[in-house]
Image 1: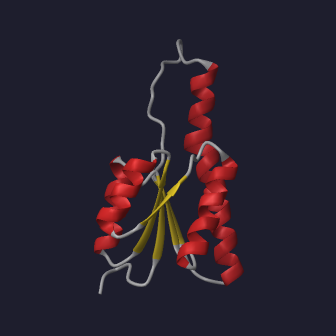
Image 2: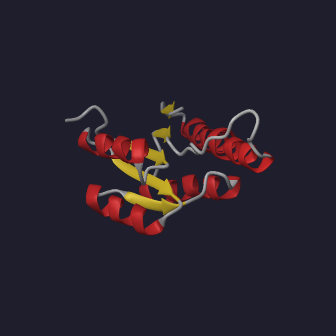
Length: 137
């Protein structure tokens, strides 16, 4: 029995990088894992490889992010933990960062994770269930 046996873990940005490794580790620890990401082909392949669920979503789009939580709950019955691993790492300097790049960082690295947490915490409160949230910064 692993540390996450009988837990449903949702990993945003779970199709690559840190998110994909978190998803793999959660499966090794016994979790049922759902991953989200923008690229369906990559997400579906990883989900098949780890025996998880892929839900296409863009965390920059609040409605898409919230819908991904609803889809996971519908398909897997619940969410016990959220790992916010989606992130934008494009860099600019103080001098050359455009308003568009700044807004993209806020949408993907702050706003999206906030509303994913909100959706998951509302679900946990409605179930009167314990749970957890990890934000990868």
